Image (cartoon, rainbow, N blue to C red):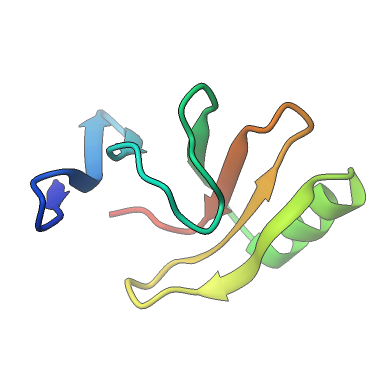
Length: 94
């Protein structure tokens, strides 16, 4: 799946192989800053996303977005690790 922005950049894309999937998009500046040189990863989790979030926060992850229900049906959150990588975890499974 590919979602293009008006300028032709890729806002969101999904690459699937078997049961696995990688989501990606073009570089952009947004509320979390530029991402060149850092990774931004989404991991689909089984079970309770809120409990997963609490474990990440307790382990010292910098919270960028608390668990939130998304309009596309997922419940997810985002954190930054000590090296600046952004991790999003949630229930999204297309």
